Length: 554
Image 1 (tube, rainbow, N blue to C red):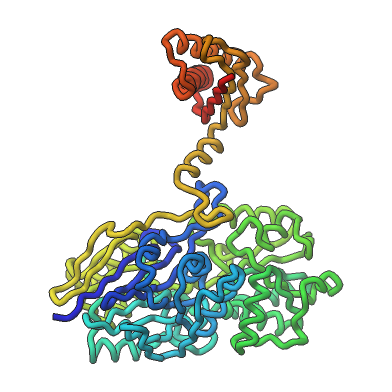
Image 2: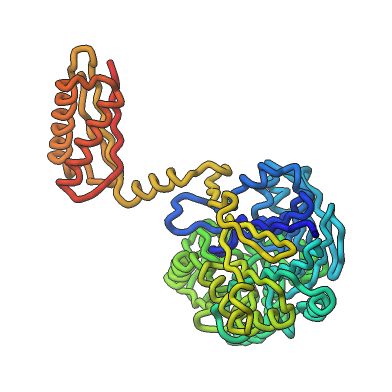
């Protein structure tokens, strides 16, 4: 009997982002991506959301390395946090490692890892793992599908991919190699990107965006143009630059990540912008606005991004006004729609014309749609299929695509974060909730925020807080000072003095009643204060602010 192989999902199954899984062969662990997720609107004050690293910490000595499938933050943004606790080498394309390495270097953790570049089609032995890196097309260059040649057969992970037949750099998804593996060895298990599984048809070629951008630059000749896209979308940056150069414009980048990524891609020969056409953003103010193209960060409406600051008239380099044109060459990530809408509103309020994906084809998705997903399924013909990467509805839609193509329902498994698959001689088993896989919130410092803190923040944001301060002498049962009622977000204190006095009287009566019942310990008195204040607030205003009792013993 061959050794069983296990796959454990730590993130990315049930949300967009936090993509992270680990594969176990002969007792060793290979990490497959480690991404982050942008916070939802109700995650107040949270900067980022990471996978739960508990399982990885507990098995640190078994981790032999990590594969970075491509350079997007939702796949590699978590490494700069995980490496604070663990140490392991990371394998990926040179560009992927360059993008991930920037974040790792910022965190001062380059000494905790070795960044090992692999080439298209390369096959590497890493501990007991036999890993093949297969080129795929995505919205960031040089992404990989990974084929793990294991004792239980080939496990193919698609990575984020699309079937673009006319990519900007000519680098196609290598369906020929994937088909050859399927024909000769067979694919035991397919893990495939589900982000667009509920979208009909084929995704548009990235090259199609170039013509739209060219037409817009022609339409808006004589006006300053500010464009925005993901800083990692090197192909989109190239097409923006090509359109700008065609009309004799000077190009400037705005935003640290855009400047850094453009510099990296030019140094690697992946981005072609001549030196004479590239100027620093500091020099743009001295140039003819009609001859300028700014390529900015902030396509997702991030509050402190260059574009958001521009919309708020707080950008140190540019001031937007009538006559300016902003081209948002992106589409909002699910959950970011409100932020993007707010930025667009701010830009329009300043008099700019805004072109976005809702009114022009200035964006092409990097993820395969239904017909492309079906193509991959038909070429791979896996024995088992598990949809990955997407919200739960995407995973289910992908599973239904498979069963609609003739896969038996027992061949297809929809999993969630925390589930573990075991592939053995007799088939595939799933253990639900095998490992911790909750959200790890980052607010300044990793692990600084718990779910309880977030709950408190929501209450404070929605209902406010009432603090009741009272000093007592427990030996005599007397109230020495107070009660004093302080509130934020419940009522405006200067306009509600009577209400606050009534609340204080209710608390005073409750404390006296507690003493009469021989409740003299501080915790018991605090419960009486909280109950009395909460009851009064609810009865008078039908609101439920956070009640904070402060009982001091004198």
